[in-house]
Each structure stands twice: as C-alpha cells, then as structure tokens.
Length: 223
Image (cartoon, rainbow, N blue to C red; front, side):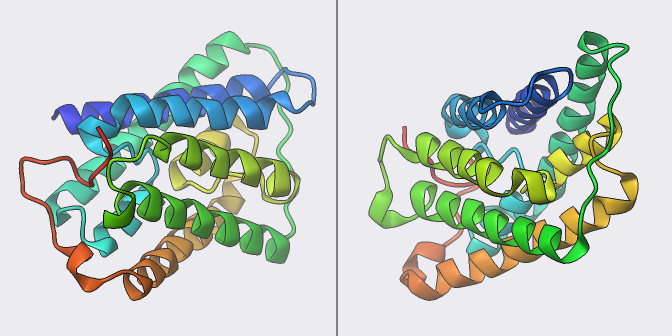
C-alpha cells in the first residue's frame, strides 16, 4: 500500500504545480521550471518507496523493461490517476473564478510532440534509474525532472507538454485541454513508452531485465 500512496502523492504535487503555474499566472518561463523542479523533488522523495513513476506511461515502460510486477501495474496507474484528479480539486479551489480556455491542438504536431518527449522521458527514466551501469547514482531525479522541463519548453505550445496520461487527465478536468483531445495523449504517451522500453532492452544487456524480488521497490532507484 505504501507504494501506491507514494505514487498518489507524487502525481498529486506534479499536477498541482502544473495547474497553479498555468492557470491564472502570467506567461513566463516559470511554469516549465517549476514543473520540472516539482517532478525532480518528488522523484527523490518517493524513489526509494515506489520507484517514483508518477506517470502511467513510465509504469508501462518499467513493466516492459522487466522491473515491475504485473500485479502492481494497474494499482500504480489507478493511484496516479487518482492523484491527478485530486490535484485538480485543489487547483480549482485556489483558482476559483479564473477563466480557462482550452488550447487548440493540431493533430499531427501534437501527436508527434507528445510521442517524442514521452519517449525521451521514459528512455531517461529507464537508463538513469534502472540500468546497472548507472546504479547508485545521485542524478536520477535531476535527469528526469530536466527532461520534462526541456519538453515543456520545447513543445508545450504545440501539445501542452503532458508526456503523461495522468497529467492529460488533469489538464482535461481543468479545462486546459479539450476532452476530445485526451486520446492524443493516451495514444502518443503509451506508444512512446512501449518503443522506449523496447529500445532500452535492445541496447542494454539482457541480464539487466531480470524482475526484482517482491519486497523491493518496483524498479531500482539509487538510495
């Protein structure tokens, strides 16, 4: 249960930060910086407990990589979605009365932007936090947070910069994205996670894909 609580908390603060830095705030560089920093600190906080996925796409990637037991995958995703939904309640309380206009997405560019940077995110997670060659490092949280920050800067204006189906749910509830666009995030994010995990397994020795013991975190993060 503690793993699912950690996933709920981490996803909650990620989506809370997104909502509060985007809704009712002046357009600036603050949002991507704050979002990347929020993810970074939550990864460091929960990595030793749950592996700090905070993202159904990351959970899928870690599952395919062989560092997550199948029985944990659905509870992880449910905890992440619940954390995102709970965060929207807090955002709406803080930003009560602020008008929100959903961004207009162009299908092709949005799909490609979400795919590319979700691939980058899952690829970085797998290599920085689960690979034998980087075991015990102290930079994994920074690398993951900076990947999201970079993506938000690069394609935030194109796709909204979700790179995460739970975030996509959150921005849909908040009205930052139309519900009609939710499938774009789901397809691109999960598709990218599958490709990233396959690529990781191809370029890393097979011995690294051995599933962990049942009493260990879902994937190995440095202590």
